[in-house]
Image (cartoon, rainbow, N blue to C red; front, top):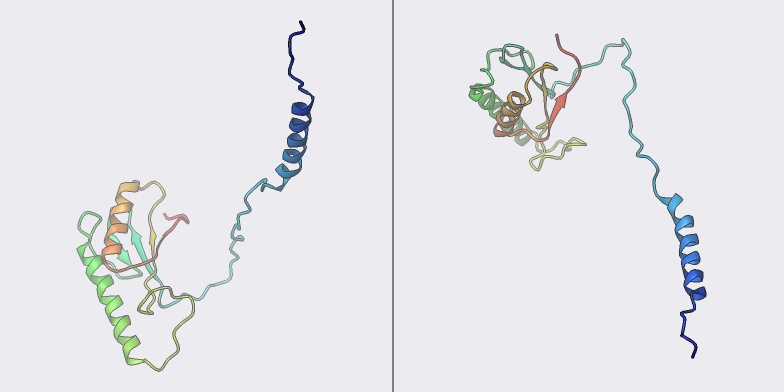
Length: 153
């Protein structure tokens, strides 16, 4: 008696068809992610926005809001938190007084005021210390919070 054998020809045909399908589909996947890198800054002066809030962490751990110094240290940032709350409260009052004005574009805050705060620290500063300042700024009511990475000192 003859021993039965499996005919593998249809199986090979199916595998070749699948191989062709995968070869055709694979180039459709993105090969790389495109990132938008900012251009090199020129030496032209840039007008500073009066609503921009920048918290500067000094090399000694002192905190400065824009040019207002003496807002505590990293370990005691309550003065900075209170000052930010005061700034946002004044902005809310000013918005209430000017109800007939059109809201500004690009503000994601539910109450319509600018709450963006930038934090700038020296490059060699410990991450945990910067995180303490981020928490203090969040307590002050800021959102979103951005970190500036340009060189200091």
